[in-house]
Structures are given as structure tokens and as C-alpha cells.
Length: 188
Ligand code: AMP
Image (cartoon, rainbow, N blue to C red; front, side, top):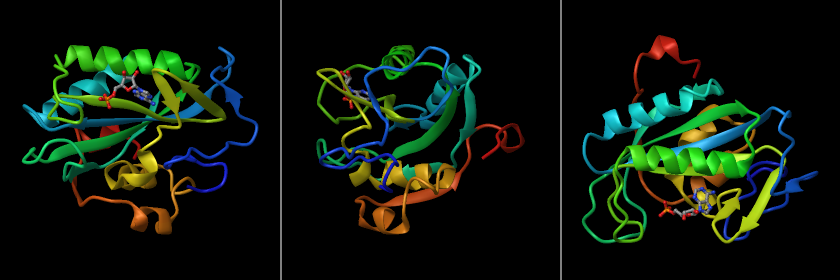
């Protein structure tokens, strides 16, 4: 990651000026949510998840849609569809996690095998100026820097946060396959 950027990898980096765990409720911060699906109607599931995020009125951009090979988890999983969603939000990281978990519940995700097939995976990737290191929430997301399925759509939205070298060093095959929904309704 760029200094001051997502700062994720095996060891999350330090965001200058970061406030551990908390944000003021009035501060609007740039944030990124990662969405993935490899079970069921992947496109419809991601469109529903983006719609769920948009209901809060803080979505500013949705990345192109990528088809990606599974990273980790059991052998033989189907390919994922992935997007990254950009927010300008007053929600602190924990509220963003709650929003992600509500989306997963709405997609009727059943947790069985870790990193196994899922209707929807929703992760808090990065929140401007925030670092969280708690049992159930780590921000920036600790594995995002290794994963091309995160970095490729993130780089589309935020080329200031992902260098070409970081993207090249990340793992997994990704293919851009278009966009969700109606292109003209989305800014990116
Ligand atoms: P997963 O199997 O990838 O969906 O993992 C979900 C678990 O990771 C949940 O129990 C979350 O509490 C935890 N978690 C920790 N950090 C994050 C994050 N940045 N975004 C989403 N889930 C997280």
C-alpha cells in the first residue's frame, strides 16, 4: 500500500493521524467495502448488496465487476464475482461492520467451512484515518494487501491507494467482466 493508504498486508501499516477504533459521528470519511459471491446468482446477490449499502445514502462509487479465482478455502470452489464499493460516510468502522453483517444475513449466508463457498462476503477494507485491532474487527482488513480480487477493483476506484507494484505482487487471477446494474447510474 502507499504510505498513508490502506496499509494492509500481513502486518497492517500505520495510518498517520489514525484514531484507534473510533471516529467522530460528524466526520465524513472515505471508506471502502469489499463484496464477493461464489454461490447462487452471483450478480444478483452483489446487486442486492450494493443496493443495501446505497439505501444509507453514502455510496459514492462502485467498481467494475471482476470474476476471480478463489483464494484459500477448500479445493474446487466456483469462481467469485467481486466488487469494491466506495463510501463517503460518517459511520465508524464498527457500524460499517454491522452493515456488512446485515448484508450477509440478508443474502442468507450460511457459515460452514472457513473461506468456503458463500452467497455473500462483505468486508470493511479501509476507513480513512482509522485503525481498529479488536477480536472481531481489524481495519484496515489484514489480508486485503495480498488479494488481487480486492486490490484490482480498489485500484480502479482509488489509484492513490494502490500502487502498480502492489497490484502486481498480489495473488490470484482476476478478470474484469463488466459492471453491476446500470452503468449510467454509477460514477465509477
Ligand atoms: P469472513 O469469514 O471473512 O466473512 O470473516 C468474518 C469475520 O471476520 C467476522 O466474525 C468479523 O467479525 C471478522 N472481521 C474482522 N475484521 C473484519 C473486517 N475488516 N471486515 C469484515 N469482517 C471482519
